[in-house]
Amino acid sequence: MKRTVIFALVLLMLPVVSGCAPLIIGSAVGVLGGYAVSRDTIQGETDLEYEQLWDAAITVARIRGTIKNQDHTKGYIYAQMESSKVWINLYSLTKATARLKVSARKYHFPNLKLAQDIFVKVIDEAK
Image (cartoon, rainbow, N blue to C red; front, side, top):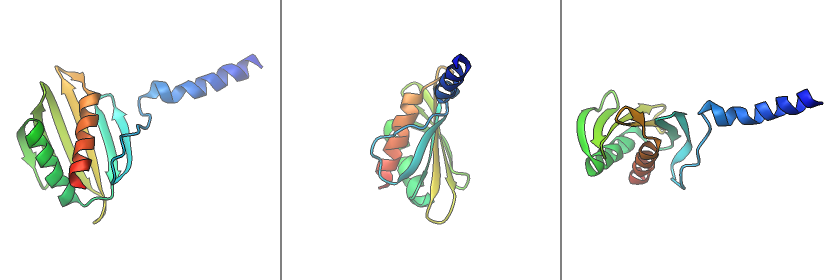
């Protein structure tokens, strides 16, 4: 009996410790799912087209900071925002869906709050 209870507790705690627990990211329309990939990265699939998402990502990056490097064909934006380095990656999954991945680090430490904020702003801007 005692082993069963301990095993059940371990199973319940596993998602909390693993770091890949799903996040509820606001009420961003257009997001099919958003989740933390690592301690500094938010990723989600959207029902928005690649071009629409790219334009929104560029706009948000310019408003929030300085774009240091970008490549439209590779779907890559590197920017400096609020003393943090931010990487925005876009992937075209189908003609009508795309994946958005945002990573942020401040002084080599994860900045998940900023990554989540940029993720939501890009989705909102793309609406």
